[in-house]
Image (tube, rainbow, N blue to C red):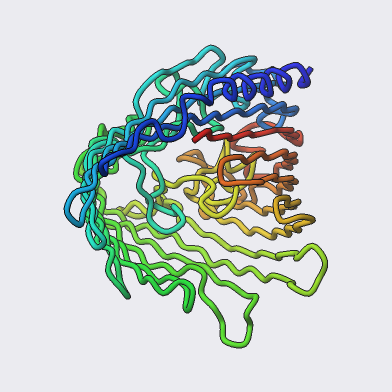
Length: 440
């Protein structure tokens, strides 16, 4: 029964609360500060009709599963005020595990996988204009459409998947220049082995007039090396984006969008990359209606390889992240986005409605229509690009920036493309709960 793991999940929250005495400011005098926090992450999922009825990939025929993912993330921040600047350090670790039957689809994490490892290991210096940091650290561009985080949270090395406990890029160096009306980042990043152990260098520029016009941004980067698992080395990437764009005369309307080009020649295969991805999104808040409903629409497109050309047209969105603006950025759907389509050879339409009965509660429904861009699934031909339809329901509670919980239900229906590629015809049902609590 799913209720027993849920009780265990809440028991873990209570255990972390008991340890809260280690959090907060540990020392503060003479311009020197030591602060600590402890973050708890927990996720419970139960599913029927796994992989459209064929069962988990690591246990075919096992069509029902429950999985429990747990993570603890202690963090210590050190700051030393100097003349008009601050020297700082951030250190965090993660202890995480997956229990019960293992990750639902049977391809990413198994029951019993566990990990204890460092995440952030940052040393930096900053003033009111410049911030220089080196070491393992979080870094994203925009809403994480291409550069989101450096860890896929896969397998025994990371202990879990769905709760996303690890997020830092490792061995990175970032220069942030915080000027107005344009700010920028120059970065060197290294991803986790799950994302090809890629070395990435690039620049990001963006406007700082968000409250007036929204944010406009430009990005350019090159991938210099990887472990050949994803054939990313040699890729050159450029992108342009806009977020929170306001339309004169429509105060409650916001627009978002991004366009990314992948070019350059693969160091592994010698093929030229000629791939693109883009999305457009609009949301409108009905401010005069009770519970302030917001209606969203998004269309996203990720090119697929055409197969009959010398170039590679398959877009690789390897470094996207989750929950920059909502659950759907950028894992698109609790079934398809989590387990089958990873922003590659994909075309997705999203319609979403959220209401807010109270300032700290929301209720939402997501409808996805997923298709393949070209008739193949990771190189396996299919006769139809129509992949699936999916409906997600979610209730969120966010009383403070320290506590967040989500209770969700997902229902996925396969169409011909998924039936041919995966091999099943049944609907998938997922019931899930996620909790994040930070003591500081």
